[in-house]
Image (cartoon, rainbow, N blue to C red):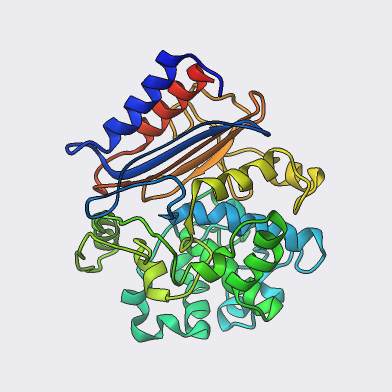
Length: 365
């Protein structure tokens, strides 16, 4: 380890403060690393009940699932199995695709970059009833006109970038349709095994040593109300099942959420994007990160007031999860910042805590 004792004590105090009895998270684990060494690791809070959290436990990844799925998409593209340039119209036979301009020309690449124009969110079980678990019904709904209002009907081009869970769900369904394989099995064989980590796709259904999540579904209730729909508040205790309502309703690993991850697994993924070689090549990584806007393929770009904060370089890229986690990669400093956490309320803005973690870690290391 590097860094002075006062700086490390400040990091320790930060983690302990997050999870103190009147804190903002029930559990948190932080890890700071370089491309070759782990510089810092600490766990705080409780796994379940009064059991103290130990390093290496599995947190509900929420949207930290997305970088893993984008990595799979890039691997399939590199191998020529399923190019990212593939259009939805080449995979699905749908009346919605045939009759409207809203999905014309939409590619898998656009779905993974949040530039397709599909809506940000929809409560699938409420909108579809029992049919939400029927792949054909789910695809038909995700391709329907009312989820693509941000696309210009004449040019069929996105009116702007829009972070979207349905976009990643649709991408996952497209991958399964095109390959004839389940998403979890593909993730395990194409990404997890080559990276030398646990079979995350298989473990998603029954994660070992999961960390309890007490986060409520208040934000989903608010989003549904904005769409004129009623979603019932649910108990804020989850153990081994996704907190995300759509991921839980679908019952299978889907493109936007559903993984349960450890800090070590996040570190392995981050190092692969920092120094490609096991599943990615440098050219593919660079293409994925190229472009402008708030998001690259699978990742968010740096922003001073976002989850990265000014302590990281402007070339940094990363992602967050709704439950509280984040992974940020800083090529300039050769540093990776992993935070897995379960915040206690959907009303808590966790980005200030992520920025403070990055600030303290940058000072220490």
